[in-house]
Amino acid sequence: MAPRASAALTGLCLTAVCVLGTGLPASAARPATALHSAARIPAGLDTSAARLWVSRYDGSGNSGDNAMALGRSPDGTKVFVTGFSTGSTSGSNDVTVAYDASTGAQVWAKRYNGPGNGDDYAVALGVSPDGTKVFVTGYSLGSTGNYDYATVAYSASTGAQLWVKRYNGPGNGDDDAVALAVSPDGTRVFVTGYSRGSTSGLDYATVAYGASTGADQWVSRYNGPGNGNDYAASALGVSPDGTKVFVTGQSFGATGAYEDATVAYDASSGAHSWVTRYSGPGNTDNATGLGISPDGSKVFVTGYGLGSTSGFDYATIAYDVATGARLWVRHYNGPGNGNDYAASTIGMTPDGTKVFVTGQSAGPTGGSEYATVAYGASTGAQLWVRRYKGPSSGSTVATALGVSPDGSKGRAASLTPP
Image (cartoon, rainbow, N blue to C red; front, side, top):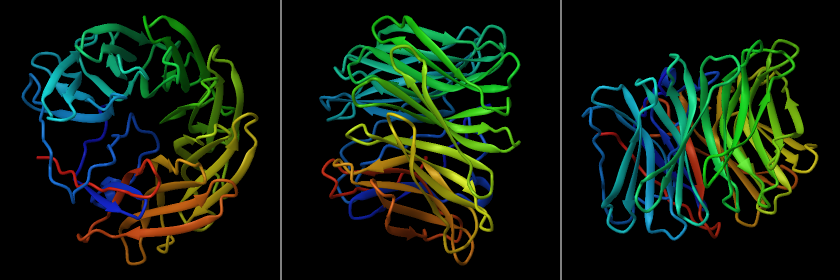
């Protein structure tokens, strides 16, 4: 149950937005109903500038090294990368590497092999606000032969392992962590994913740990009204004031169809503050990304849902942070009137006035193209749409998006596996 393999990535620069993606054939590019994880591709590399450095990591198994997430220290001196790497005798292990941001020199590399001595997949990474700790999460084979959440804290300066916490849900089945966030004050680490319930299939399962020691603080689960499978997306957010945690994804509804389900939790207790569900015109929806406005007043969710006559369309929704009230919903159907899948990232201008989504969209002559859409954050008014078709005859798939710190510039990258 490994994450999907990466493919060649290309970049597109708009005036203020950078979009990254891949040129996969359509059959390989279509998102699955539920994924163990999606690679988080770092935005901000500029192909027009001189290359500063390249640093490679070759694991002990000398094959199968996959980067999945990237972060940096608040002071900008270190870059951290995590993923999974074939071990010499233990399948794939979590591997986290720290690099000097100026030179690319490897500062440290640490591996984690779970108690099952099998496959361990790190998929998400966070750095404490004071820059002293790096947190990694994913899923790891346990001693019972099933996957558990596995969250590891490292010293940012030395790579020393500070603590490890595992979570095995009540169903004692596979539990897959997909996202991680750190509270603004650095005291808590939040992890979410989907976890086997005792009688309810897979449920959202969100866990809070003390950042210093890994002490368990709370576990909160969400089982949708259909009592079926509920898949938290690779999207977890914390309000700027640190009081609420937000999770979104795809949840089985009472009508027998999947719907978007967004849950707000009290950050200190894990109690549900509110739950809101959305079913579009085609009654099948999947939320993939989540973002919070800089002023903490709105939560934005994006994903894709069936249209009445148009296949899957982008579906972007704004909610009130305090109440969960739906503020606006916008759909985007590309010129091919086929399937349009929003990626798992949302971008916002620093002043919070604009929201950006990207993904893959059916083109007018077949195949998919990048489609990036800008909305007004207050009303959801569509401000512009930009589309990009790569040089090949295959599909072009946007997977990530970034906005420059001042909201005025974007940079693009082209990343290709060796």
